[in-house]
Length: 436
Ligand SMILES: Nc1ncnc2c1ncn2[C@@H]1O[C@H](COP(=O)(O)OP(=O)(O)OP(=O)(O)O)[C@@H](O)[C@H]1O
Image (tube, rainbow, N blue to C red):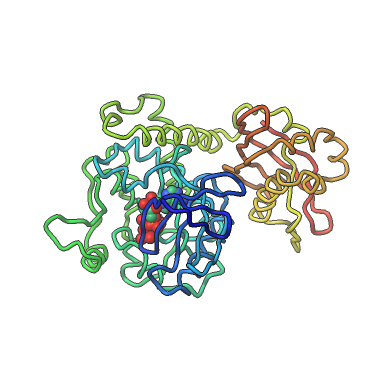
């Protein structure tokens, strides 16, 4: 136990774990009154490298804002070093989950489908994670969450080259990286496949009991040997074979992987419950994490398979529920806005409207403002909004997102919202919103 306080507000409680780049601590945020996780940086490597990593991680995680990406709240620098302040996930890393026994294909698919969704979103934004592995996926009560974007590469980080090979985990590296090539979305697909192998077998791929398992030996095997065949892969075997195709071009996109895992999960849900024998071998905490993941997956899958979505709940969303936008970056497209700009607009809108309803209201057209008398009342009660999915249709000038939030006095809600946008003088405004 320690009473050390970081940045005057985070009281360290206990060490949760230790990675190659420093310790991770549970801490209490004295200002917001919540538990957070603090990762200490700079303890082992050069401080400059760690600071760069941390800044990149903070920036990319914030850019993603995905429900299955560990949120980064802050980055603080003290005399003792730099600290990354993150959402604390109450659950083990997947590498710990499979320490006693491997998962069944159903269990593995349930856990990884939302992670594939987060990665698909990252890829759509030009971000390659580059270190997808079981210890970077945490099994929390809201489902699995991806962390450690420290060596991820954004589209504007063209100068970052070899860091992944040095600090990434050799066992999950794609063959093209093991032979000196550049990381691409396809190499994340391989690494997710390698993660799947670990979950189904309890070991990293290319691990051999009879051979040297040092990093260089493993990298050599990745480059020169065929991927492992997993006898217990069941119905995931075809997907596994495709994700771990040696030729990156032969691999599916992450969006396809996500779709396959999610569809499979829904099919499995219709025919069977969670396998009781296997479930009894896990901690209840992990079972809860898997169950929560199923709930979220069904939401995501419902969106993918049934674009009409489910019945919405919040009446408030109809008039005042979802129009929104940013005060900082109403996009100023030269021509028509792109899908990415519209999606960013929607994300920024929800964040802005919930933080300051008057600023959100300013992003509606005058006509829609007049039609939204309950706007401030609704957004003033929205807490902790989280965008789960967002898709824009530039031709129709609509952007549709599913988000969940807590409505003060009414509890948790989830809604599918479509915003009709108009481009007024280079700025986007919301002309109507419908929610289901
Ligand atoms: N936000 C978090 N909430 C809860 N636990 C976390 C969080 N981030 C990391 N941990 C835990 O802390 C431990 C160390 O994490 P860290 O990311 O530093 O290292 P790693 O991923 O295991 O290794 P490496 O640094 O080589 O990538 C892990 O066991 C992980 O379970």
